[in-house]
Image (cartoon, rainbow, N blue to C red; front, side, top):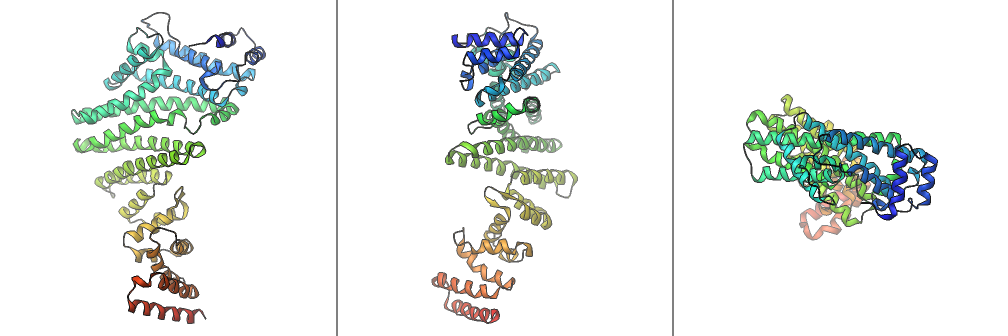
Length: 467
């Protein structure tokens, strides 16, 4: 709702959209009114943007919901263009710019949902729209006495978050109160299509904004305060996660003919969800306190482990030598590489026996937790496969030596017991003598007398070989 302070700014913006106020005059008036001083929705330009998006029709019911939505999109596009032409866009606070672009994207998301419904949207989508519309009508000030579907499309900025909330709730109900398995699969597929369509529409609009308002779009990036863009925000992640979890739980009860389709649905949801988590983690890295960053990274890792691990099991069930199973495996491997999912990459390598791919990944991949090669070293050691660790190709000699030498690392005593063996393999005999001496000094209490004598003898031999 506009405040008295916003009234003059609203009038100037509306006049500019109507072609009644020139671009230079718009900039002057907004400056004189102090419109550039405020952040977020307190900024009159951002408040006007919300008013354009959520403006209610003069009477209910309205038979032209789609037409009205199109008019709002056109008006919002004109608003951005007027602000660009006048130079006002470059004067706005980053948080106000963020909201301007977000508003346009949410209009586009709702337009995609409208398109789905006009093409005969499935009953699950209709139910979600009605529930979200009823909540949007109740949240309007004053409350709206309108049919839920009309209210849904009349209030985009209220409806989009409510739509995501209702999708998550619908998916949770399918888990808590399962019906006929095939019907539940169809419902999940319909809701997934709706969420994907809405996000695709929003991201298409985002690309348009980035192309035509590039400078302001970059400035808006500073207005997120550690949060990702709304298309990767908490509401989107919750909806995608609920759909993916419901699909995973449904899988076992499906007839065999539908299981491959179900796995593809989970794969599609996983791809989108992990991209959202990656965006959230990247945004947090720039602004949030360390505890919150760690919490986000933990949630991201849990999502990778749960969903990529589940998909790997399905690929194995389909048969890794069968076309369907191999195709699914490669898609999962691609996601695991893209998101530095080290445990899953290791498990895939164990399942396939593809050492060449594993070695390529060990050479190339590095994430927040360190090089993938270090993860593989640790897994081989912890899995009791020291011989395989010592037999890695020579391109890993330097990295393995550094890892085994790390006295502060996890399992440092076990690493130290392998260090001298690695140095013998690399013919670094002078280093062998030093490593054996350090090992005996540090771990003599845990070694038998004969083993200590053997190591001291080897130390002497290594020193002679080095000389």
